[in-house]
Length: 477
Image (cartoon, rainbow, N blue to C red; front, side, top):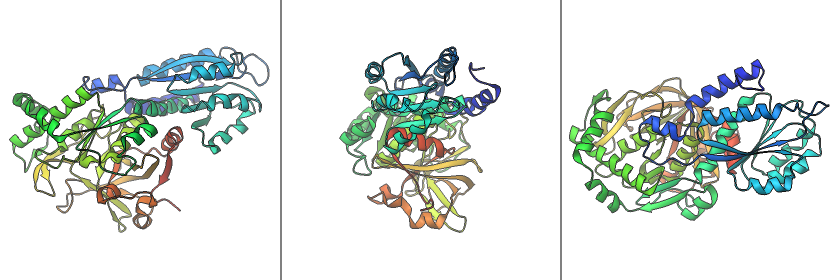
């Protein structure tokens, strides 16, 4: 049981926190458990912790042993997440806030535990907030009266998540979100043939400035050269183990075509290791062979593989992978007002839709619908599953639409994996598609990404930490 928690708080931590962590953790150990530890993972996020306020036994102070209890709890968070490292631990006062502010600059994120205080705390803590790191401030009830001034930081656009709560599990979940901007700064994205999407997302300089990630274009010729070096027997073993044996059926494609798709995966894997990349997208994925199986497996493993060079969706998938540990399903959606639904379909889908440590969903190996050729997947989705449809647009706006899977289908008019998602108002969604923030070609305007789980509050906090505008697509105007 975590130190410093009463039974109600502990139950909240274990039920809401530990269950969330068990299914939504993305760390090096999780990558390894998923089956491929050689693929590169970002390093642990360095999070500076600070205790603010007074300890003692008087009114508006916390007991002197409170800091020890929090430190023990931070150790538990490190062990559960596996990819964060807490540093610092200063108590302000007596530590000079100016000195601590200089030390904080070397970290990836900041956690402030507000122990106690009064209205005069806000100007002091502002010196820490103004460092500009993604910041979480945790303030339990009876921590004094200074909390009234903290919301002004949010109004001023500061990247600080405020947690006025007795539930330590909220602190735990917020730390999970603090990893995201840190991991993005250690992320390398390969765009085979160049990226495709909004102008800002296609510009490596802007991607680097806004998100910290490196966007690198590599030629399709290089990819094809690497593919030629892949041992056919290794490709056959890969195809048999990961695709042919687990599949419910092999319908249109031949066994040889599946093996060739496995060569595509092994070539992609080799280049990602050489380039130390965590994500790849390709404008050549509709060639021969196609990239459907490759991107599916990468997403199963906790990495990102995105079709059609869609860089906006690639970045969206990275955010959700780092924050929640779930893969994204890029979709060509249509609207059905009769069902009050958005119908999703595409030929590339992960099979571990609950995350790298989850079970694989049943799947059938099919051809790609548009061309009636190649190798694609028809994955069975879980009816009733809560989902979030999302897209990061132009690096600074995050569209989202929550719902549930109403049912699946196998229409010959759509791509192989198909399901309908409930929405709040399908007609409004149809008439306001893109929320007037997306401009571009058909793919850029059309594509969205669907993830298992609903994350509205977490997305609000993530948007705050990363300076994004969160927009509920199809929501009430």
